Length: 366
Image 1 (cartoon, rainbow, N blue to C red):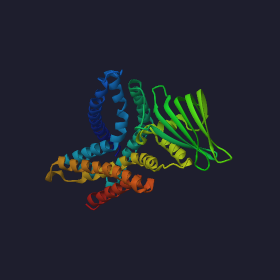
Image 2 (image 1 turned 90 degrees about the vertical axis):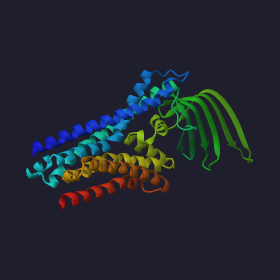
Image 3 (image 1 turned 90 degrees about the horizontal axis):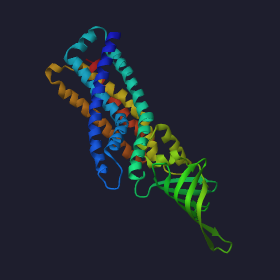
Image 4 (image 1 turned 180 degrees about the horizontal axis):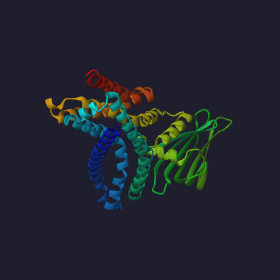
């Protein structure tokens, strides 16, 4: 039985690796074509070598996104080929029952789950930050949207709304604006700084313009304007939190998402979008298990009555529909304010039930 397991593992790993490399080569070509538009821009020091490096650093993120569907395609191809050549029939007569075949594939699926977690939580976020810094050195800065990143923090009975326009390649913040509100929600002060640096439990602001609004006893409001070359603003907003608001949530590590969600909740901000993405990153690696279960019934089909390509294409379309449903649930959950963990887990649960139903119908009942 160990020989059969080693055969299945070797065939599936080789097939999945081949499918993954083919997908990565395709995405590398598409990303490179898109990145070449920056190499010819006047005023930008962005040579072709940096474009190639930036695109190459984006491959781990694609690997994380493609692993489950690569597992599905590779495993379906191996199972269907073993069934077509009657090798799987010989394995069944040698003692490879349905439950033993399922457990064999689940063990292999767990290995792919661990690989997906390692790539998605450690390799991909690190390479994405490096690629963003390479683009920032050439294009000048990293920003999100037209207004930059917005954050919020409470300090005692006062609250602060912070806007960071962009982050440059050296990690300095550009175009910082800080709005302070008192306990009654009135504006207490506004602070603008051309740039800022992260310090321990504070920000070092440079080229500061500060306006303070004082509520006087007679009901009038006094306005004091101050210009300072530098100023230190105490805050618990760290560099990781600012980076989290600048980077897309699907490119963040799970633990970074968790800390950012805690910060948003502590300051009374909506974290629905980030909570859905957090639970999606928790459940997404488990989709590899769903894919191997979905591929097992293909080993019990009779391919003499039809071509193998049709069955493989059906399985591939089922895998693509899983990812489409996953995205649809993510957008719908964010709009309808559904429970984040249920929104993220629903596609996997639905396809797990379908996979087990197909396994029971095609394998156990036959």
